Amino acid sequence: MSDIRDMVIIGSGPAGLGCALYAARAGIDAVVIEKNPLPGGQIVNTTDVDNYLGLPGIGGFEMGDTFRRHVEKMGGEFIEDDIGSVRAEDGIYIVSGAKEEYKTKTVVFATGAHRSKLGIPGEAQFTGRGVSYCATCDGAFFRNKETVVIGGGDVAVEDAIYLAGLCTHVTLVHRRDELRAAKSVQDALFAKDNVTVAWNSIPDEVLGDGVVKSLRIHNKETEESTEIPASGVFIAVGMKPDSELASGLCDLDEKGYIIAGEDCVTSAPGIYAIGDVRTKALRQVITAVADGACAVTSAEAYLREH
Ligand code: NAP
Image 1: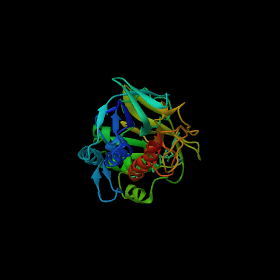
Image 2 (image 1 turned 135 degrees about the horizontal axis):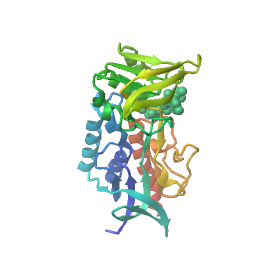
Image 3 (image 1 turned 90 degrees about the vertical axis):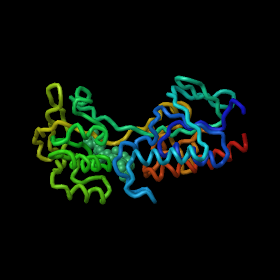
Image 4 (image 1 turned 120 degrees about the vertical axis):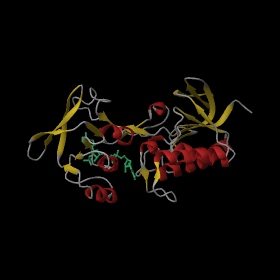
């Protein structure tokens, strides 16, 4: 076997795993490089996934594990490594990891996204001491306590619903007077009797004494300032793409997403972007997995020519 692979897939979330499955079926010599041996990417932080066809109510961890076992069964290869850079050299790509260098004809970025920070006073100071970005990871620490969730998207509302099952009370702090989240999750939120929504409210400061004690907010209509007592402050104000490795290699949009259409083809030959790191309208598990399939189809045509 040549030491130049056909494809290196960086990331083992649903997009990377979908890509690895299609690559294995297409007879492409591909490897998935994962930083962390826990497959599934962001989905492992979700309790129940109800919108993936055929797997109603599956847990996020179980979903990642099911996807990974499917890829392994089809002959997919995985390597644990932390990739530091990707560069073009003599018509191929060199993917440099902490352990090894990988030579490849094509690279698929399936690097995903992570939660944005708010940047308010107290946020960094109390991270890990009451401020969290993952309700399913840290929620159990706040059993029978009061918590606050900041944000109005799917993640914030799902976090608030999850925490309502553990905490005495949850306050959802949202900067507008309507939520961005899907109607189905909004309905589930409004059915909870221990959740209050602080509408039109801007978070100003996380307050505490070694650990979080409260969140100070102000209402942008009335300008009134309030302190919400809370042991936990969960921040869910959107995502930031993990596209640093692609920067300088292919075009990114103004938010840092790798620019690619449905065929997942980027501005650089042989470089593909799939899942949450790609410019797209709908970031869901089902669209991430589909991207993996589309990238393999695009790469097959490229590999035939090169
Ligand atoms: P999102 O949909 O972008 O929502 C971010 C929320 O944070 C918005 O409500 C936004 O307010 C608020 N926000 C942003 N910056 C803020 C700031 N500085 N201060 C206060 N509030 C701020 O992000 P997400 O909820 O993390 O979801 C990311 C993607 O994953 C979305 O496409 C979502 O649909 C998808 N997702 C889907 C599912 C599912 O289908 N089950 C589950 C989870 C996530 P505004 O509304 O005023 O902009």
